[in-house]
Each structure stands twice: as structure tokens, then as C-alpha cells.
Length: 251
Image: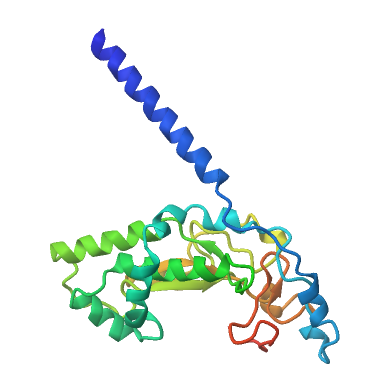
């Protein structure tokens, strides 16, 4: 009887903790909408009508919902650790990064956390956000850990494709399991799919799907007159080399 009571107490406490963790996760506010009217007005007289903002922020996408699930994982990486990783990863090619991993200076987990940290750092700050990342793979950190474990056990000793273990962001008109494929359209904001052929090939060769990025709605096939880089679902994608400088494409 005592054992039964003890078991019930443990289950109850575990359930309470899970409920509390879930509640805390939902209460975290990582991003707050801001008044983007001045930015919109600033491009209202652009010579090219397709380069005039409709809006900056999405009216339907809640960045908190996108960024909350991995927040705890990303928070484990400190600013100091991020800065140490910076020269090893930023603007390095795949082969340099793979060599760092081979030599033990870098892990797949830290590689993923570096990119996530950088995304959180810039996308959640309304003065630097580019409105690029509109979905994240909630399992990507765990998937990276599994690759590290395979390396430690010597399981991954076969010839690896160069893309093995590399974090990939997909354009949001590429079907991917676990993340909605919207093509930037509100009409598809709840669209769940299986993996497309290209995603199956990426996963087959060990790539880590990090998340999905905004695009010109319907890849510009059905959004006549829309600003470059704009979608109703994701908002206006901005240029990292100048937030009011438009690109003319470049998917």
C-alpha cells in the first residue's frame, strides 16, 4: 500500500512539474510587435511600385510561437561561447567546418546552437530583424546530439556526404515534415505535408533541417504587384546589407 501511495505521489509531482514547465514556456515573451508605420512610409514613394512596403511585420505570424520551443536549448549557449565559435563558423565553407568537427574543435550540437543563437539574436530584436525565419525544427538540437553520439561511438565512420551534419534553412515552398509549408500564403498557414524529394535526399545524406524562411508569396507566381520579398504570412523580408534596400530576387 505504501509503495502504491509513493508511486501516486511521484506521478502527481511529475504531472505538476510538466504542467508548470508548459505554462512557463507559454508565458515567455521573446518578441513584441512594434510600430512599423514609419518604415512603411519611408518607402512609399519608391520609383518602383513593387518596391514599396505593404507592411513589415506579419499580421498573422506570432514569432513567440516560432521561437519559444527551442528557447531553453538556445539559452544554454552563452554570449562568450557564441563569440568563441564565431571565427570557426561565420562565413566559413562546409569543408572548413567539417574539419573543425573532425579535429574535435566543434560539435554538431554547437554548430546548430551557434546558428540558432544568431537567429534569435537578430530576429527577435526589432531594430535588426530581417523577417527571414518563419519556422524552426523543434527537434534539430536533439538530432545534432545524435550525430555527435554516433561520432563518439565510431558509428559514422563511413564516407560521409559533405552536407552531413550541416544545418539547412529551407525556402517555405519546400514540403517538410514537422513544419508547415505555406508558400507565404495565409491560405496555406495550416498546411502540413510529407517531405519533398529534395528534403528526403538532404536527410538521407545527414543534413540537419534547421527551419524555414520567408519568401515572396507563392514565389511570385500568384502575387501580382506585391513588394519584392513580401508574403502575407511572413511579412516583409528585409536586406541584411540595408533594411530599406530591396533585392530583386535571389531565392
